[in-house]
Image 1 (cartoon, rainbow, N blue to C red):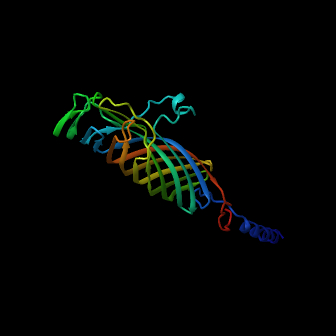
Image 2: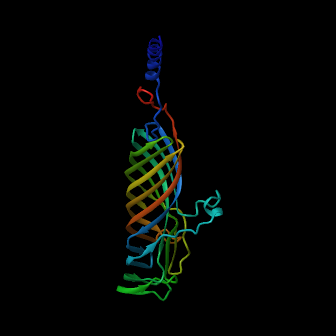
Length: 283
């Protein structure tokens, strides 16, 4: 009798166990939407910069520039009224297919020409009313601020779209570790803070050129809705139309490669129905 009762219990329980479905959490699924915010460090290759206007046309060769990282203060980085002052990243993304996402975002970098460096200069300055009038034939020139200050500090704004592919490395209850890689392209809309030959400073948003880039990332999703992500970006920036003074005839152009390293924090939501795993036995 005991054996018969045990067999009957197993016969009833087995279909119930088979019918049970267990939801497998996979955040990089079709229909998932995310938004993130974070901060970056950036570096740039040397750049040749050409300046031209009514009284000058010259070129500076192999100019060194750095980023400008704001010192960490909670009331600067976390205050809504000041959080756009540091170098930041903002992005919105959507998974069109499993593993494949498309996103738009803003990479707010800062580009600061190193002052007092000596560079090779060629070209002419005429009737500027300064001590810098003359012809320059590959002459060493010190970048004193009385001659030139050149910064994209509010900032080197790279507005771009990216396509990425994600692949899971580890998927355990409540946590998912994945990698991502992709390509992007966009436009540069810098605010170029420049003083040149004593002219009035110009510091307004201006569409100056375009950028192309590659990106790789390591992403940790946790508690279903949140994630932290480390990114590395490498790319090319070409700006043939930089405003330098209040006179629209005064322009500059340059191109260079950039490296950008980001740490971002975000939230992710499934906009379509979550997909459940196939039927399997409980153990």
